[in-house]
Length: 180
Length: 195
Length: 93
Image (cartoon, rainbow over the protein chains, first blue to last red):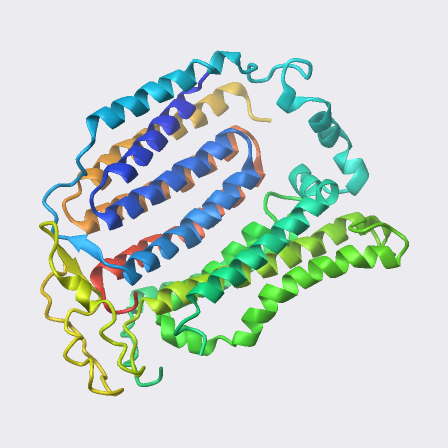
């Protein structure tokens, strides 16, 4: 069942997402997108996922807005617009709504929140094993870190390499006039 | 880039950043090092630490901060983080374990501290990459000064289209396009479109 | 251990603060000038700190306060970045 705080947060998040798409001014869209990030961080906390919430908080408040601003500073931005929002293509919007409704009909097929290990594949034996045995195996209190580094070390090593490679790639592309 | 007029800082922002930045850096290191016992880890801590540099750039000017930073440290962070991760992963083989089996190191609680070291490596890489990305994007946004005839870069885009007016970053900069490298202080552009 | 009544009270406070944030979103939407939007975002960020702190108390999870701390430290960075961009265009960004 959806608690009141989840309902309020979902309203907030959906409103910010739609407004980000609709606002005509790019800077206003970036500002509203910052609000979206705030709402998502709170929602992760409500769902008891503080590690993801911390990531969202650090990236959303610290870096993402600034990078977006630098990007629109590099390009140009329309000002002095009369209309606040873009014109919505009504048939396309209707098609999107129909598609979302079609996807929503599959929701009852999902297992209920908090279902037992037998019914819910996402909370099967493996995650139970992690939650129960992670401390004895690794002496790390935070299960997320234990899973990330100890159980899935290869994956994390690949991620670190991907961050490294992506950074080097972006710097190689954008390097002109910066590193000299 | 030394011919550029220093950015006129806002005293409020400078005072705030001077007060807050040490705590943010400390907190970023804390999040990196305490990923094992509290929420967080290398990625989050690295981003928070990189936010310190972004903060300093907004307070003291991007160019000054870029000149202040030692680029070798930046490259060392990006490469050294991955190298540290790989060294820890490979070092386990030396002590008779398997690749990434950090539990074999001859230190107290090898699992926990091995994981912490790996998190430090991730944090170094992320902090370096985010800082470099920020400077790459933000410094490119500056109108180039002292370069060879490049200062009229995107001023061609200021033509009005679609009922709105494009506001570029320096509306009066095309007349200084061919004047050579001096150009100190086209401050207060008279564009009149400061919302 | 927090008893049920106190936890419900804290959650109710969090819900109220979230509703205030939804109202503030209207100002971010229609705000005629960019300054209105920046202030609205700043207040939403302060509300996020409050909501996260209330949730940490309600769930009896002190670790959640770390995230509130991140927002408390970094929220002003977002506002400062946008303000500098709007006010001093051609200056720092």
